[in-house]
Structures are given as structure tokens and as C-alpha cells.
Length: 409
Ligand code: SF4
Picture 1 (spheres, rainbow, N blue to C red):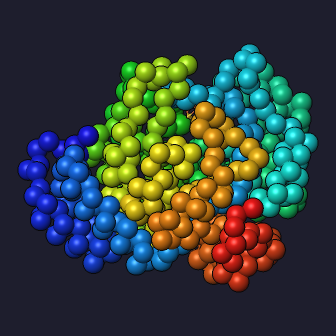
Picture 2: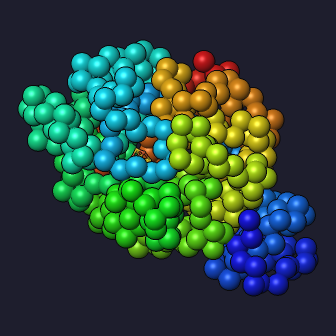
Picture 3: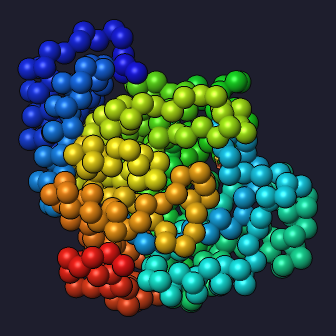
């Protein structure tokens, strides 16, 4: 996909010069990024973008590529929204509808602790009680007035059980995040895309009020004001254009400039789910995914932590390792990727080997990155006080043998 058909195509020499300027300056400005995106269809220009992105990553992040050993807890797969690509959300009468009790959360956490997992990823649908009376009644029977009440308790159980929660519960208010902060090391919300066009009739977010970009940007800003280490991300292939992808990356960069709380940015390709309205839509070609990861590195700059989920791109791990990423995200030895259950996680050993083949080194992190262990102001005191139990002297996972160069467990 071209970013803009109105821009003249770049020569390879021009592209290499723009990339070199961006790497030297620390990040690409909009005009240069638009020009490069518009010429991305040429393999030689993609190679130039990747080479610059990899150089920027090595300059700022060194040879490390991180991963977080986690358990994925889909607290509820009920959701009031109906994104046309989503295979996660279920109707309450579906046999696959599932809401975890606190005992079930506790059981997953115990299993995770046993195999060295530190991150409890709380991922769930958005405000299901607004749409479904049966869920309101279930919550009330447990003594909760809302999904957030239930979520706060689930995070408490995970934290007290010996893990560090990272919550991605869709759109939350500042007040909700304040309630979650004492039990969470970090939180997140995929920005996905800032295009209002995607909320038009017939498009991916028409039936998804929580995907209003203005509301999602506001939540990012509120997380910044609350000083919460925050994960954002862009979803590729849901009907957006190249310029809209750049707008989204630049919006995330602006938030980071204002608040300094964006701990990582995920570049995630959309995977079609056959049972959904977008089931017949083709995913982005592998080379486009790699090129957008590389361009994201150049736009976001060398300091940003950049992640691409390895289970969604198993054929291109080697290319991604040459495209500027420095993180594989959460990988679980126990639980599925419930958002993309068709895409199994790679073994840590496999990630270790392919990362080593690229001349880089896999390390295990917490649900926060090592640099955050120098920023107490970003944590509730009880979370801050707990971090030494999980981190070694470098701010990486105490539980892993990877840090010392041993084979993955
Ligand atoms: S908000 Fe999330 S869980 Fe809900 S329908 Fe959209 S993608 Fe699915």
C-alpha cells in the first residue's frame, strides 16, 4: 500500500539519504516518513528502511531483544463493541462465552508462578455490562457494580499470588486506572488507528463506540497524567491507509513527547477470523508488515521499545529482527493467545535461537522494561516495593536463565 499516490517516487539514493538523516537525528520527521512510505513498494527501498531501522535499534538498544514470560487471563470475552475483525468477543448465549471467577484467576496465576511467569496479562472485552443484562446480574451476584470492580479484584488476586499484572481492558476512565494502579505494573490500550473513517458505516469500528480515536487518545493522555507505564500500538490491515498509519504513529510519538509514559509500541498485523465480517479480508503481505515495523522504528525513534508479536508472523521472524524491533512481547508457556487462538506461541528456545542467529540476544523482562526500574514516580508504592522480588540487577527477570546466556527453559 502506498502512503500517498500524490508524492513522487523516491530514487534509492534519495531514500537512503532520508533514512540516514532520520537515524542521525534520532527519528524521522513526517515529510520524510511520508516520502519513504510512498516508495515502500520497491524492495530496495524497503531494504534501506530496514537497514536504517536496525542501525537505530542497535545504537539505542544494543544487541538485546526482550520477551515477557506471561499468562494470558481473558477475564471476560463478553464485550459491548462489535469490531468487524474480532473473533474474541462472544455473545452471552455462546457456549464459548467465559468470565473468570477469582478462584479461576488464582489457579492460572499459581500455574504461571510455578513455571517462572511474571506477567499476568489481563485482557478483556469492553464494558459488557452496558450491553448484557445477564452479565450485570452475574456481576451483582458476585458483589460487583461493574467489570472494573471485578477487574480490580482479579488484579489484586494476581498480584498477591506472586505476579505483576498488566491490564488491557479497553477504554478506561482516569478514575478506573487510578483504582487499578495499586495492583498493576503497567497498563495498555492499542490505539489501533486514529482514523475517524474507520467508524463510518460499513467499516471496522462502526459498531464499536469504544474505538472512537478521540476517546482512546484521551485515555492515553490520562494514563500519562497518572504516570502509568503504558503500552500502545497500531493494528495493520483493518481498512486504514498508509497516511493514516503514519498519523497514528505520530500521535503516539506526540503523547510520548508530552508525558514520557509510553513504554512500548506494538506493531500488530490483523489476522482474519473466518467467522467474522472481515473473515475474507487478506492480511498484509509479510514484506509490508516488516516494512511498517521498520518505518515505525524510524518514526518513533531509537529510544522507543518496539514490539511485534512473533506468533502472528512466524515466517518472518528473521526479517523482523533486521527491521528494528527490540521486543517480542508476551509469550506464554501455559496459555493461548486468546485474541488469536489460531496462532500458537513459539517456544522460548526457538525465539532464543533465531534471535541469536541475527547476532542479537534474547533476554526476559518484566511487564515493564528495565529503564522503568529507575522511575519510582511511575508506580504505586506497593508495586514499586515489590519489583526487587522480580528483577535482577539489570532490571530483567530474576527467573530466567536467558540473562546469563544459558539455554531457554
Ligand atoms: S473492543 Fe476488543 S473485544 Fe470488543 S469487539 Fe472490539 S476487538 Fe473485540
